[in-house]
Each structure stands twice: as C-alpha cells, then as structure tokens.
Image 1 (tube, rainbow, N blue to C red):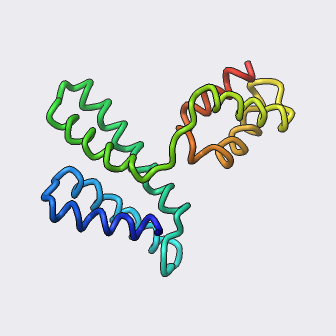
Image 2 (cartoon, rainbow, N blue to C red; image 1 turned 60 degrees about the horizontal axis):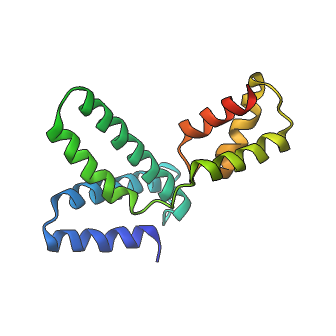
Length: 149
C-alpha cells in the first residue's frame, strides 16, 4: 500500500473517530502530497520517496514550531504541534541511532577521502543522499564536522 493510500485511509478513520489532532496532521500531509504531485509537471501519483521527503519537511516544521512555542511559554500551541508531530512521525521510516549514524558517516568520510573540515562540502551531499531519510540533516552535519575536525 502506498503512503498516499495509507494516508487517505487514516484520514477517513480520523474523521470517523473525530480525532482533531490526527485530522489536522493528516490534512497537512495530504496537502503537501498534492503540492508535490503538481510541482513537477502534474504527475499522476506521488512516489513513496517524494512522499517521505514531504512528510519529513512537515515534521521538521513541527519540531521548529514546538521549540518556538516552548521558548515563548505557549504550552497550548506547543501541545497541539506535538500531537500533530506524533501523527506525522508514524509515516516516516525509523531513524538511525546515533551510534549507527556515526559508523555510516565514518564510512562515507573514508570513501570520499576527505581529511579536513574544509572538505565538508564533498562529504555532505554523499551523506544526505545515503542517510537523508534515516536521520536529521542537522545531526548528520554535526557528526561530519566532528569527524573532519
């Protein structure tokens, strides 16, 4: 079952259950998928890879909003974003642990031949291509900096 189909099924169920947080999150995902489908010349269907990228973007937005609301002491809005994030994260692949991520990045750094932090631009695209859906880009960047310095 494709991610798009799965989201439509979950949306129907959330409507039946009258789950407001799930409805907000699923509607946001569905909207992002429609945008992804129309932005590249009107494809018939969004691939699962495109869907995951769109969903990752939504999750990142929610995480940033949670931090902002936490800093501004807006617990009501923070709670709403956390509920949506929980629903959104169900559709993302499992994230790598930091130890596994370090090992994978060390192999990429070794394969690229980079020796200093100034060569980070050579390593980052390789790491994002291989690990982008399995870990946060900020964490990948931080580990690369640490390994190259």
